[in-house]
Amino acid sequence: GENVEQHPSTLSVQEGDSAVIKCTYSDSASNYFPWYKQELGKRPQLIIDIRSNVGEKKDQRIAVTLNKTAKHFSLHITETQPEDSAVYFCAASKNNDMRFGAGTRLTVKP
Amino acid sequence: DSGVTQTPKHLITATGQRVTLRCSPRSGDLSVYWYQQSLDQGLQFLIQYYNGEERAKGNILERFSAQQFPDLHSELNLSSLELGDSALYFCASSVGRSSGGIEQFFGPGTRLTVL
Image (cartoon, rainbow over all chains, first blue to last red; front, side, top):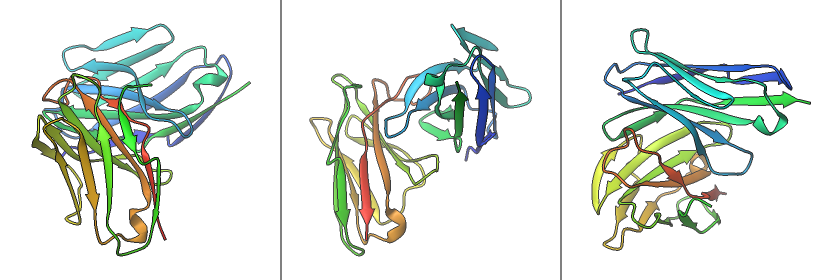
């Protein structure tokens, strides 16, 4: 089955800096890659997603890139703010099976 | 508020017991997914139902079972509980049959504590 690895497990940045979280997946047939943000004690919420026919997608300060050949995708957050502090999960999906990475705890210091 | 509801919010029980977690999907969503999130760990996909039928199975233990009823709500049954089953259990729903390319909306979760 699909295996998703996510790095780093923790990331601390200064407010205004950029943050990058990377994920790799094992199944080349995976075709949908969402990113979820989970604030402390709350439910995961989708922040951005990308399909396998697209290499990059951007939404304001958030962007995701996908390299199908290398089977990795990344989340980029620019101009980080304290409210970006949360746990971020990447996921890879094929058919009806969605597998999540272990999560990255992002801390943005004011 | 995602529109997905889960009950109860918290559940405390003893080892060896059986519990049932309940989920109501968003109006119009036909798929329900169950996930387990242990302390400081990621989301483990357990099982998916679409319109009453099992659609996909993940890392679900044999002691666990689920079903989706005609009104589309779903229940996750956990039996012979062990300490390691203590976790946050999330339900998510989506409109489509496939988890690919469609946003899943998560419920608030049920926190299960096994003593």
